[in-house]
Amino acid sequence: MVRVVLIVLMMLGSYVGFSQASEKEAEFSVTVTVNNIRSTDGTFYVSLYDSEEAFKTRNPVKAKSLKLKNNSIIATFENIAKGEYVIGCFHDENDNQKMDFNEFGMPDENYGMSNNKVYYGPPTFEDAKFEVSDTNLTFEIKLF
Image 1 (cartoon, rainbow, N blue to C red):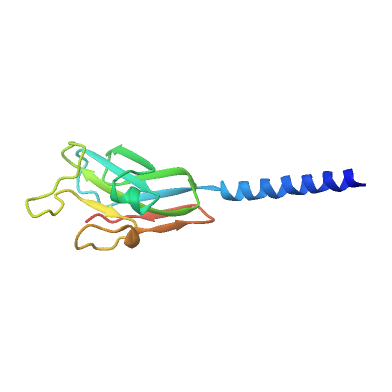
Image 2: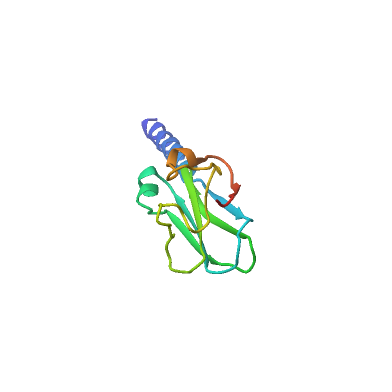
């Protein structure tokens, strides 16, 4: 009898462990659309950040660089775990692999962030964050 109880308890324990692991590892996609790109010159960069620290240090969890064929892009990030994220993007028109700024510190190249807020100064993780929780997400980002 003790053996049967132990076997049942072990089976239940492994079942609970598997159900928790599958929920924790649930993965989704995040799709980004940008429609108002002013030219097809250069490269378009889209980055996905999973923490405030990663955002501050510009260390994305996933990133894409896209050559432009027309004035819009669609980028999809697959296998995204539940959590808080920020999407940042910019159009590197001169293809120097960085965002250019003028002498006053204002961007010379178009950029955008999740939540499409207008920023007076650098955007913050808190202002641009969104949550991946139980479904695939789609965003349209407007360039500034």
